Image (cartoon, rainbow, N blue to C red; front, side):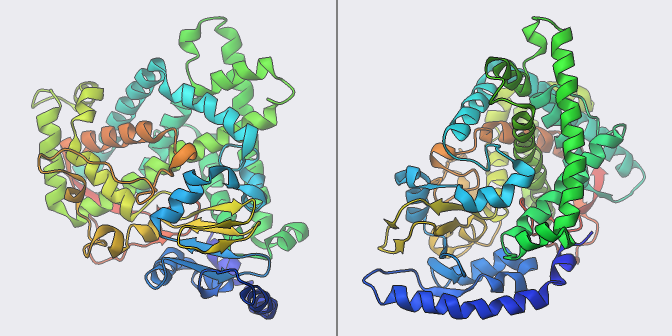
Length: 507
């Protein structure tokens, strides 16, 4: 279903909403008469609905005129920035004064509940502590590495069948299935086998989860969504149905995992997945660690583990198809770094990938980072201001105002990346010796920064590098239609709209 078309049916309501701008203008005039200094006005929140399909490019266009600006809103200031000093201020310097707040929680809670991406305070700290421990243990690292290698080889076998028949294929969908298999195996200890198409329920869950994410994104620009939810109409009625599919699947998973853990007794070696750690915690605090809370945790981990890597890998393959010289440089690096015989098959080759070889793939790491610079998983994020503040540069922020930092737009700013900011050039991440050089995380905010920096960042890189290494070792890729213009889908994560169709040739 095209949720944009569903949303477009509200165009009359959106136009009616423009009448509220009189109120906004009045508020601006009143505030401007004081000694406070606010960012320049670049438009209204209603203009975002008119530019929904190209929302992030619309924001980029405005950001080229103003590093920090406002879009008028009936209730509060919506402040947008591409200034790294402002980003650092809200993510680290004055961290306690900025958070998810009421705005994000109300938009996200129907799908993500009290999960780590929707909450602040003790709930956030508790989940982050457990997730950080889970991602950092050697057992989880070893286990996840084996899962990534196995699933990369499975995907290579499937792509080989397309190459053998000279058939085009949609690679984003394959990445979504494969990363879904990976996150459920490593985080929840469950084998879905979405890539093998043997789990219908898992596939239906994935579709419902992705559709829900699209509708949740609409809430950020549709000021009437609460009315629609109350009346159970339009996209909000669809969301309710999709969330039921999601909930049915997740609660079944939780009960299944509880039974599996009980049957393995005290054999902790079999219970090293992250969900097991949360289930152990629930025994200590059953009142707060309810099944609903576990459900929320699972969906937030799915968002972090599935969409982030699948989205980035899809854009990565798009960019290396547009830049075949980069594709060949990565192939040569993979062949130099991984110690495997020339005639090693998919499974044998993947088994030779280890942490040392992944760490030595500097050019591949640079190419993936360059992909994230141009096509970040979360193209825009925001924090709610909890008390009056002054941003670097002197702009005032009032309690309740929302500050958006724009990773997509920041990756295209010449004042940050030079005149070739919109050019895909992995070399910008390498020193003269070809060693990867990290960038300021408040300039390159694809993984957030400060106390809320993504705990799964290194795991994501390991998974993406494993998949890329295996696939590029055995295949050359090209776009099935070089003339087709590729666009993003406006959703919670930056996916390729209508998928990415490729052709593969055996090396």
